[in-house]
Length: 229
Ligand code: ADP
Ligand code: ADP
Image 1: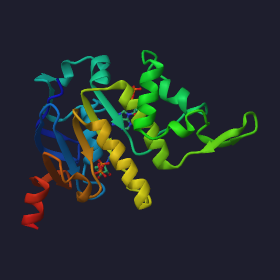
Image 2: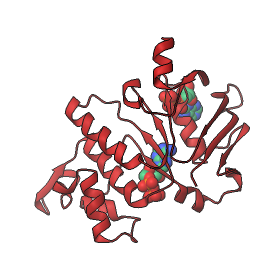
Image 3: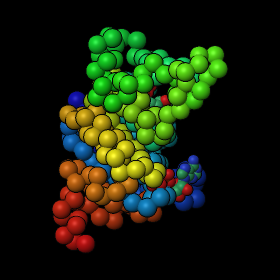
C-alpha cells in the first residue's frame, strides 16, 4: 500500500486561470517525492488535491490504482498523514494533544513517539505559555516544537502515505537539524511527498519536481538537477 499517482492533473480555483497544468508523477510505496519551487508555484495545492479538499479540473489522482474520487473520506484520512508547518494545538497538555484522535495507542507507543520526536521532556506541559490555573506547567512552544508534536501524532497514526511541509521559518541551524532528523524518522518506510523549501534537505528524494507557475519545469534526482545547474 502507499502508491500515489497523479495523471496529467489540472486544477483551477476559479474558472479563469489554471493553477496547475500537466502534473504527472508517481510515488511508489516507500518512495519520497519532493516538490520544490517558489512561493505560489502550486505545491500546497497539490497536497490539497491529494486530500480531496478540492477536485482536479482535469486528469486524475490514484492511490493504489484507485481513483481517489472512489475512496471514502474515512479511508483517505486513514491512508494519508500530514505534518503541517504550523500546527494548531489545544490548550491542554502536549500529551493530550498527542493522544487526541489516537485513542487506540498504548502508553508505550506514545512514549516511543514522544522520544522519537524529541518532545518527551515537556510532554506534561501546556503548549501556549504560562497558565495561572496550572502554574509552572505552562510552556510556550516554538514553531519547531509544535511541528515535533505533529510528528509524534503522525508516528502514532502510522499512515502509509505522508505529506510533509518542511519549515521555512528562520529556525536556528541546530533546531532545523533536529526537526529534519525527526522528519526523516517519521517518513522512513512510508511513501512521502515533501514540500521542500531547500534542495539541500531532499538530497535522498527518489524524484524532485521543480514547479513554477503550476507546471513541472524540471524533474530528477538531486544530483541530476545539480549537474544540470
Ligand atoms: P505554493 O504552495 O507553491 O506556495 P499554492 O499552491 O499555495 O503555492 O498556490 C498556488 C497558486 O494558487 C497561487 O497563485 C495562489 O495565489 C493560488 N491560490 C492558493 N490558494 C487559493 C485559493 N484558495 N483560491 C484561489 N487561489 C488560490
Ligand atoms: P487526523 O488527526 O485527522 O489523523 P493528522 O494528525 O494526520 O489528522 O493531521 C494533522 C492536522 O493536519 C489535522 O488537523 C488535519 O486536518 C490537518 N491537515 C491535513 N491535511 C492538511 C493539508 N493538506 N493542509 C493543511 N492541514 C492539513
